[in-house]
Image (cartoon, rainbow, N blue to C red; front, top):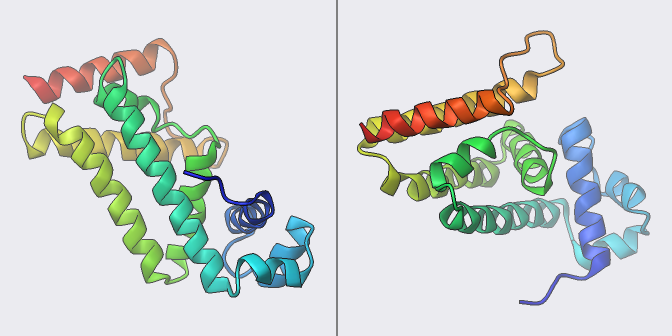
Length: 181
């Protein structure tokens, strides 16, 4: 598979950054061109409209999630452990793509909302073979949601627990026992 042109990725990175930092309203074509350091014509060469930029973010998210699911399925400690550990945001590409997509969904973008639902379904499908039943699957998904949410609040006015190190490993072990027993 060939890589997209660097200039195209730079524009998409700029759009994603504006979405994450300032929200959908601030993510205009002009602001994206400025942030990417390209002319408006350069932007339009790669993305003819804001909708095309949004579609680029959704395609990026899907590719990152496909890679994440493959890594989850290949993880030496298993899919559940991988999934829970990776539920603590690291400001890595997948986290930024999820946040950018969430910003689009918050503004009423139906395709972004569908993409986020699809991400959750892909992760659930990867976890399902390791859970004894749907309630166990729900437990894994909800613990993941809580880790992600509390991590997002960390440093804010209502920080929640974000286990790290031995505390994370204890949580992973507890969840794994619960979904198998």
